[in-house]
Image (tube, rainbow, N blue to C red; front, side):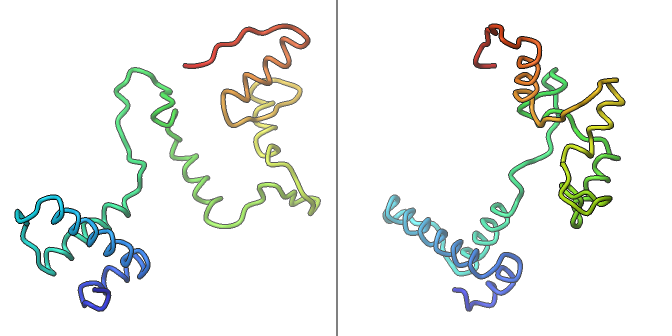
Length: 161
């Protein structure tokens, strides 16, 4: 089946390995259908097979994350990825991600730097704080706050949402 001319375009788009795996899966599905339905078979031809194979590969290639509309009433919904990024942030991210970036490299000294340095000064200016430590989730932020404000004290927490 891999030598069939209809497979060439699929191999070009998805790789020989992925197409071979999809062919095996599609054949297994056809065999299972025949075993489960006995004589009540559905039409089968190479054309039908390759159409189904094309649909399978296209479905498998779609990103699993899809854009949705947040109509939940919760502005920062954790199940919907929280807050969308502003276009300016997306542009900056795309520019940085298009090549290597000085994430943990200090261009001034030529030595290893801190990934936090890129936002620490911005956070200090925004908050008026003496120092800042950016964290990537609420749990880390709560841990820092509890460590600071309840040092040597007792904190009651709740698990769950």
